[in-house]
Image (cartoon, rainbow, N blue to C red; front, side, top):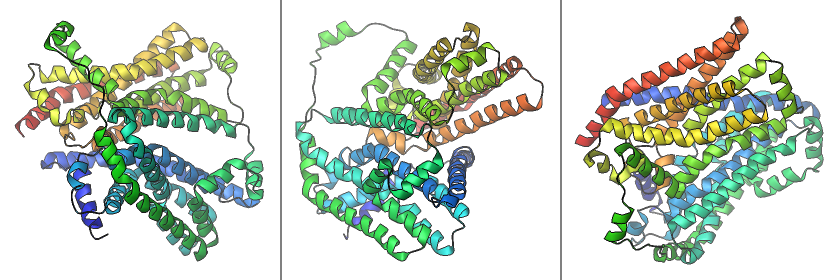
Length: 555
């Protein structure tokens, strides 16, 4: 493995987003990083830690103090397995560096070990923070000693390795049949569909906790009668040994935890040397379907349109026809209703549709307030998660010159990208709000008002994302997945969106509770606040955003 470290260094430089040379932009990026930490990382980490702490403290009385940390770590592993598969697949098979590296005198298992390490380092920063949040919550609740803390640090850093190794092994086996597949897009498409279905199943299955008494559930776990946890312990045995090591401070469990990693990593390296070359060569030989495009056909298909319409069509087709963008930027907008339904099912006494109708008909102010705030919060967070705005310029990649050379004003191009991002997000958000309003028999005026708030929230986050991406777009990338997972702008945009949504929603709720303001008056205040936010980001776009594009033109 003499080339391993050198390969890791090279790959890390290739995938990492280069820092800006401009001092002003460096300071801005530092400020945005601080906001993201405050708005995204700290709330998520503290929230997970608090939940685990409460469960650890309460369930310790019945001998199930590790239930909270167990649930958290098992679900983190499940989501790492689901979302890590496409990351590993792209890193192993769809990077542009493969054709240059394969002819070099490097062993295949060395190459795959380096690529796996880079995928692990670049993808699991957020997950490791969540893991540490859960572990810290467990430490405080269980009053752990110094030895447990050491074990927790080791396990917290290495926990996502096993799920990613599963992804790597499965991708090696799957891609041995790559010569039978039509093209790379087909692989992306079908794996993306599979991942989307798994996410829906995972979120929907949260309903298995409906009506479950947590203490009865803990007793079943102690007696080994819960099949769900038995399966999880079999699939992720390292989690069980990790928890046992922290609970008992027994070195043997920690050695078993490390040993499982060594065994699976050895299996991965063995399969890499055996199967990787077959998969890569089969993929290189795979050809897609090509339609014959004669000049006559192209001229007939060409219709004169306005500049805005043509540019919007181009942006929309990129999102719809690129499988990675379609799954991560478009289809992700349709997951959140399933997640909300799953969370409702977890409640011991979930609100029924009939009960919500009754409360709304009785003009229950709390229900109206929560619905109003949820519209803003969900719209902003969803617009940040789909990252359509925050990678709007990065998606151009090597074709960034297209923006410079076409006879179209920069600001108009900017608005076209924003219109597509707003439209794609609005179709799902407002569509679901209208359906929910009809089901709950909410008045048409309230539905229209909620839709306006939603569109303004989406517009703010989309234009903000484009503004951030214009500062320092990631134009050098190997595959489409790199635009999403290696772009700090998407991360910053999501953090700011969550922070602003939190300020508006929490501030609105506090204002309602401590004053005698009506829900209608509060709604108008929120409307004004969103209009001001949109005006601010539009002014910044026209003054600084277009200027930043011109600066990139000179580079």
